[in-house]
Image (cartoon, rainbow, N blue to C red; front, side, top):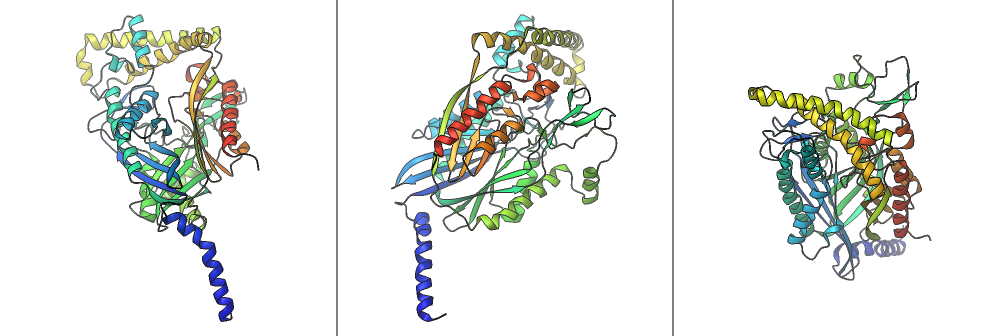
Length: 531
């Protein structure tokens, strides 16, 4: 190459790369500011673990549960144009009361911010502390109707336990989560983002269907009448990376269609496979890496193996034995492999000033229509459990020494929760007449050609696929459990009659699911106008 041609090439190269450098370093330019923070939300005393019908009082800590916050601020001509704070929590769900308490603390700490633009999602680990659910007052009132005098703090479980009450943990966690929001917001600096798609086998549809057409949660597959697995699986891994102005990787958002419940039966606090995933990623990419996990639409998904109740060893169990890695560690390896395989390519596509917009909306969805027959069936089952609960309650009152037995509370708390679960159908039958629509908060965020869309439900995968396939964005992260929603099943799952699709499990049915899809897509489209 001649000296003249070399000089000309160098000038053209400088012209091409100059805008990126300006966006990343000039505070007066249009750019993105990014801040991260992680806080420990593990309590220092026993708590009730949420995720099963029966209570489990924690008997130690397997690994810490955390909240991770990512603050994103779009700056235009030196002024804030729009912003959002994403917070991921190692919890089973995000109750409305927990969300609202976090926002109240954020309002105090950062009065200049609109706290509704802070949204929380749960990873749905079944080994996280219970925090008192939104129906606690209703359950206390219902208990009084049955003649049971319960402290309001224990209306969730039907009996007082030697643990931190959920309402106390809620405040404990809210203060710390708000602190993470504050830290992330105050630490924001110019940076860039890049998004992409990896692949890892993590979740499986957990509903087994038999020749009769009936489906069963975790049903055995060795039965001669086993027909098929009910629904689709999505093994895509949505990835959003962040870099500082020096192009040093700072964090990653990982969006996976699977809840984190490998260890769901343990009596120890744990973040489940996300703990192993964070450890593995930090081992590979640096100890300071921030990792923000999101569960995509996964109400009918699970990390458990199909036919897990089988006495036979299957191929995946055999590989776990051969490799010496348990299920959580296998998933961590797969997710880390997905991240590091995509990262080198996305480092070439960093956006320093992506199109940015954040919309918060209250949508109203049609409640699932519960029939009088549904109510009668649910109340009949509830009555059976009520009788069992009262029998166990009398035994404990007459023989208080039974409280010294190991896990003495298991059966009575299950009987109580089952009683309330069935009785809730009657409440919903009344509500559908008085308030046929259920208001729900959803968020839609645009980052360049990426969209992030939230919902408060354990959303069945089909709805997530509908949103992603019809979205105007190049890639769309669906984020479930950003509120206190129940399962939102598909029509075929309702017909199958498995656990997550029965009336007691749901507030919104397939009609409301379709409304959620359409309203989410309309919001996305408003941020991605037609060319």
